[in-house]
Length: 252
Image (cartoon, rainbow, N blue to C red; front, side, top):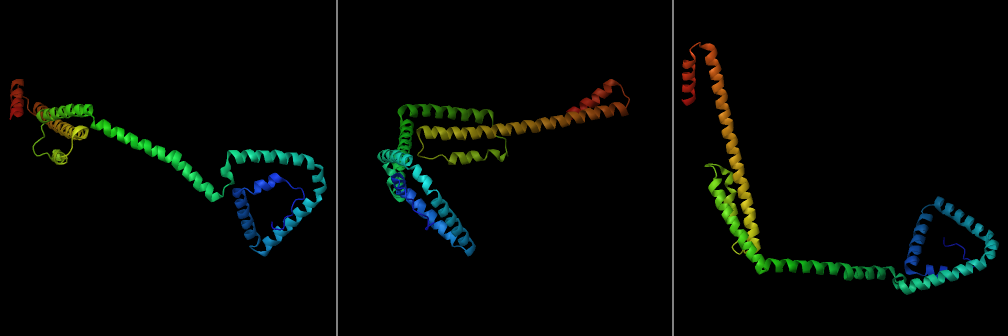
């Protein structure tokens, strides 16, 4: 690659493109990589030397044909130069070294994207704090907290915890978890969470108790039916005697 021929036809646009720092750095890295691969062993060295010689011979053979297209190539070179002028005017960042491009891009993203987002997030946070501390929010939170207090009384009255049932033990933890400095909306929110957990526990207790009672009553009803059937089959007595025995079994 180092032995590549230099074109006799000079194109200014090609020189300007190659002189762009990013392109120049890329070419240097490609050239270094090519040199490492080429000199890895003798076989690779011979292969690439042969390829370079073939390309050089082909280039020399097409030189007469290139001269026939010299005028169109010069015109194309002029158009490319004008395009590069516009690029340089509109995006001067392209002609900076890669390190400067990286740092400038990073600063631009930080100034125009990250900082505005953080500023808006801080503004939203301040708005939320202002809303929570407003008098209207405090009044609504106070009314809501009073409603939860009334709800607690109704739950304690109509959903009394069963004696010996430990599922309602977290209620004491809820009471101990109340912070002394809570007030306003935060206090109402935490009170609502405690009320929700308490109502859920009491409903679960009541449902389980009803299920146990229903199971017990069903078992007793089945036993009564079995006893009545056995009594009717084994003892042939009058219907009045059977009814008396059945009644005695039920009420004893």
